[in-house]
Image (cartoon, rainbow, N blue to C red; front, side, top):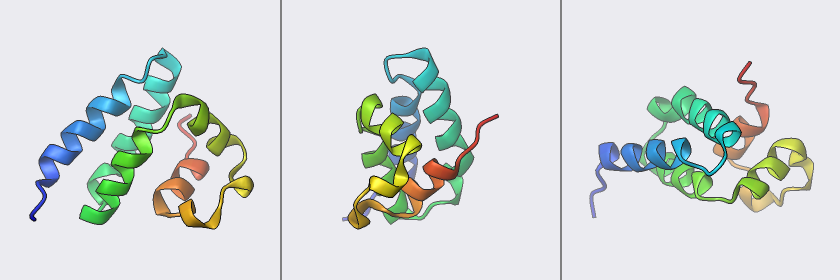
Length: 86
């Protein structure tokens, strides 16, 4: 099945922008905007899963990447861990 990259990007951007707290909206949406156009289809699907994680899980991930299992130490997660918005 062929995926529509534009539809996936729209869903990701929407979810990244409406997290529940303004701080996470700003952090996640700025991260997504910084990488979304550089990703292939597989990475976009991974990013979609990433933005659907809870805010608590994303904060933990950003603060302590070394405790993350090898299974999820992917390009997206590593990019988020290294992302410095300001």
